Image 1 (cartoon, chains in turn purple, blue):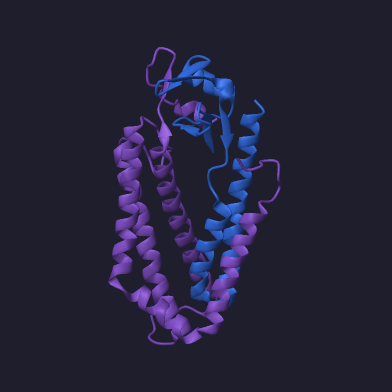
Image 2 (cartoon, chains in turn orange, red):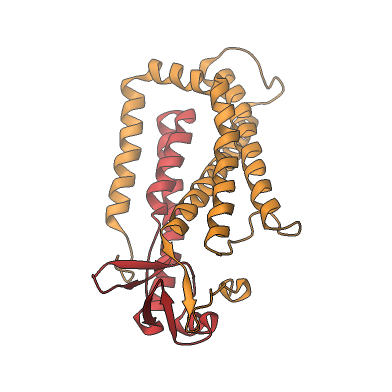
Length: 179
Length: 102
């Protein structure tokens, strides 16, 4: 069990620093190759297809794993139309967010970094930077949410169902869990 | 945050419930005793542990997205992603501490 009293998790920070330093070093060493790879990835139809398929599959798995173990998950979008619709909508919403962010970032990247084509003719440098920052954060948020949903689905799979003293299945109370 | 008990073989068995204190867990179960499979446990045998590593995930995702902005983008994305993830990890560590001290 990790030590919760420790203020910083130095192992995680060290791993994070290595990842960031490796990415930055790789970029500097293979500048042109990385630019081309990024362009190919952004332009590939497979990227957009995966941006849709992965969130939808992850959120459906999240739904079925929770149902199988009788675990109630947090609200993703709205449970007004039921838990299944919430999970299905979650996949669609995050799929839309990721694919739209990638499509717009592709335009910005090709226009600003590669220097080919004009996707956003009326935007100045500050506007481009602002739009890029907003889209990058949107993409970050959506990807992290999908990873969290996948991790939660995986976690539920490795749990045991709690039975009370009468051997009845215990259902978690959402209201209490949210306190 | 994951809740677990240690079974007779010394292995961790994770519960499919979450709670922020043993009292809340007792309320959810409707008593102090419960079963996991055929094994009998009491709520005071339940411990919590951190289950995610949002710092590394945040730094990796932020750094990869930052590639679009060049080396500076990688550094800024990686650091911001790591900070956001670290904040989530700190919150979870606090919840673990609260549960284990309850």
